Amino acid sequence: MKMPRLIIFLLCLIPLGLTLYGAINNTLGANPAETMNRNMGDWALYYLMMTLSATPINRVFGWNGILRYRRMLGLYTFFYGCVHFLTYIWFDHYFNGSEIIDDIVKRPFITLGFISLVLLLPLAITSNRFMVKKLKRNWLRLHKIVYLVAILCVIHFFLMVKADYYEPLIFAIILMILLGSRIILSLKNKKL
Amino acid sequence: MPIIFKSPSDIKPSEITSESDYQNRRQFIKQSAVLLGAAWAGRIAMPVSASGNDFPGAIKTSYGLNEKQNSFEDITSYNNFYEFGTSKTDPARNAMHFTPRPWTVTVEGEIANPGVFDLDDFIKPYQLEERIYRLRCVEGWSMVIPWIGFSLAEMIRHFKPTSRAKYVEFTTLYDPERMPGQKRRVLNWPYTEGLRIDEAMNSLSLMSVGLYGKTMPNQNGAPIRLVVPWKYGFKSIKSVVKIRFTETQPVSTWNKTAPDEYGFYSNVNPDVDHPRWSQKTERRIGSDFWQPKIETQMFNGYAEQVASLYTGMDLKRYF
Image (cartoon, rainbow over all chains, first blue to last red; front, side, top):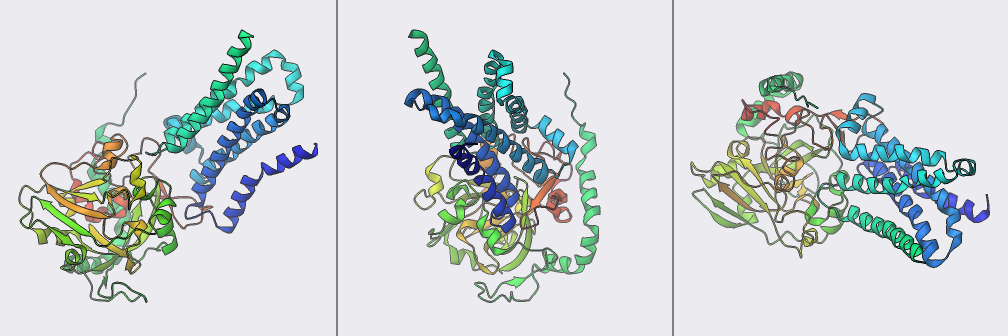
């Protein structure tokens, strides 16, 4: 691993490290279980937005370098999504399988979160160079799923909130910009 | 595809009641002598003895003596009080400079003696007491809080409601300059809540002016709030400026915001899930998060005192 990439790799672990540190030292407030779950969910969403920013940033500012970090950001999205899910099955349900399945089936916001994580799994598995080469054009098609996942995740956030939609709305706007920029860029390409 | 609901006969309120009666029996027997005495007299003559006590005249009661209380820190740092922001930590931060004085309480509607009262005058007629109550939030967490307050029933008797007073409506202060959370229309301000008159007259219903022997912290609903421990926390309206006796059922803010999620009654009930989460268990704040959650009790464990209010009512329908 090249030096800058190693640094980014380690930086991306900081939110997890801080959360674990807080859990051990009891500095996550009155409801540490909830704080852990929210922190990890928030960061999964941040990494997802960062992953989706790479292409527009490259196209608009002509900075090729950022593409080298896209895969890592994508994998961190999956990683934080998994930790988010782990805190849910652990501290919300204490690994009670039937309760968890009940929850996933019955409650739309949990259903969407779970589907998002399941959809990210094949993307994570096929993110290595070998699979990129093997799947060829299908790889691009497969990885378009990430757009669907991003939409589902923002809806997941919307459905979780009780009354204040301010935060999910911000994510919705960012996502619209990120997806909209792709549409504009592809239209431009066709004209040229 | 047919969706199968439990038939109403499966969930008779009487069955639910006897179930929780059974669960509470041991605790009830242990406390019954003291509890009945206290409920009858409303108090036990014994001063609250904490140092730095803002309410030296308040008397201790037997409510919740066997409960492990949450720390003052937990109670004052983890709050739902949207008037000061929507995150749990917002109220402590944004209510820091709130001044709950001067404060008046307007009492009006179907009563003999309406009026606008300065807070001190409003509280004066009643004996303050300390009661340790469980508080169960609709979000699935709970605390145990030593409130200082007075019986709502005594207050209601004082104002002599007419025969048309079927409900009591409470209103929170609306002042966006002092309550910055009201600058955004997250809820339909001002916050209102309501109780049926017999619920309000129940001996558990408390008007609270403090906790842990201290004047009510701003983030917990200073200077005066309602506490109805068998209902989800949002029913216990904070920073009350108006109490109105009505013939028709008052609007409850959360009920208006999402009627399918928050009913007018909102009694704690492990058998009726919130559409987005189960109400079967709860996280006791301050407990070790490695340990499983605790089971939520019918009427938050106060079935002995309140179940009779709902005899014959389908609690799945009137959730």
